[in-house]
Image (cartoon, rainbow, N blue to C red):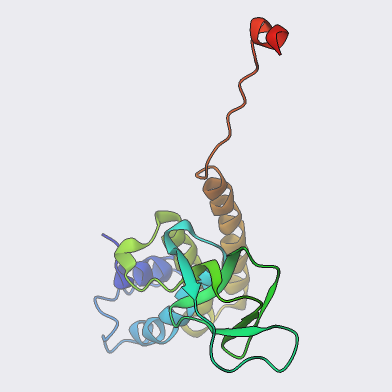
Length: 186
């Protein structure tokens, strides 16, 4: 079962820290840094790629106040939405100042939501998050910018692998060539 603490311990192990935290409220340097960095790093990794476990469908109603120009309506970005990923029936939009500016009576989109429950994390996301968190912890805990750079490269490479795996999880179109009888009939 994945937990915030298990992700932090995974990150600590990547920087060679022999200390394992039992709680983010421990009075250790490692726990204090993990607690300070975890939420922002989680949101950064979530926002960086449309992880399927974090996708959520939204339908927004327009705000009363309209934009001064450019679009006919403004829609408040939901508090759990980290990024608009894919729009539905939308000619164009722009995010600005906590709002989404677009034309229309509603704004429909698939967004990347903030997932705080670590038990819902995809295993590949856990690894990506641990790598990114380890990179963020490398300088304060291991005093190594070289380690940070290496972990950042490993994180980028791993996210590429995750993208490939994710692409294979979508609907797959199977083309079946017509037999010679079906081809003659057409």
